[in-house]
Length: 439
Image (tube, rainbow, N blue to C red):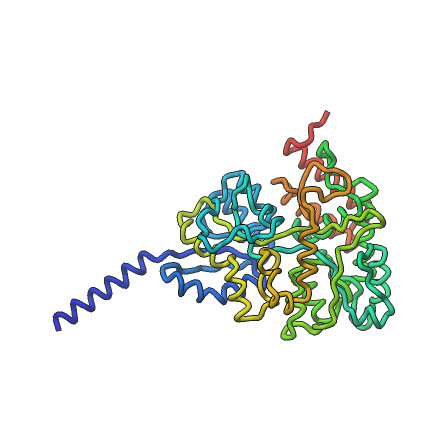
């Protein structure tokens, strides 16, 4: 009896000690299908790392950005791992808010990252975030509707063709709309699409004096086209729709065309969730006339570690598991190759199994490779970033301009009024931030 009691006490002490030594990592991530899938697969991570436990905080994109920005700027320390985009990585690394990822292990293989993606998440040659998936933008369209209407998608569609096709394919009585586009206000919502579109129309956010250029003919042409297209060929409520809402409409057969993230293709190919499987074609982001600028954006969701955490070691172990090449194989084993996180690793696009199972893979890779965030505009510009402007102030300014342009879509102001308001507000903010010096 006595020896048994001693063994029991020893077991209890051991269990308590193990619990006390366990690390709890709090992960703030975007609430999308890929992150939900990662959460579901973390039993594999737990089996390999029994001393690390995970607390997931999955949030809608706009809410996530707000909470993470507030926490990291105030060094609140709520999160040990954060999901951020390539907009934030170099800016926050320069501020000293992110820890360099220099303990990802030998199997991580940093050289396997696509060059454009690796550059996007590095600062001064060091990796400060690890890409979970990468994306560009492309035009997705219903091949059956095009065929029935006698339309043929050009290899390099123009905005003029897109408008004509959208009007022809719109049947509002049947609840089908020629074009779905982001209309929800926000720097990463409607302004992601509009900035990329403006690039293709020849517009710029700023000249070299950092004064905004919303009063230019190119911006007027961009916004007039966008507002008219949504009002004549878009679904009701477009001003409140972002990526997930348009994804739902397209896979339900309600959109003839949709211009958005390349990452949508895997969902549209899933017969469990999509009614348009086998009837979707892909084309490059449209151009305007002879300018030849497709306006491709480059975005990547990444996992990073704020300097406010004291758990950098375990956090890097999780990030290595979640973003190395073996994770794609884990997803493929559970869900199939089409659901492997796209757009980050050379090895994925060299994999015959992936290429065969994901017919959209070549479009994604081409769109990412042809994106040029270092020179996104037709005219030279003082900034980088393809669907954003890579300055710290852009998040606040982009949100405000997004609100103004969304108001134009619902008819609360004219395009001319919206552009004038956006120009005035942006000039005021850039002056306040000392980019512009008034005489």
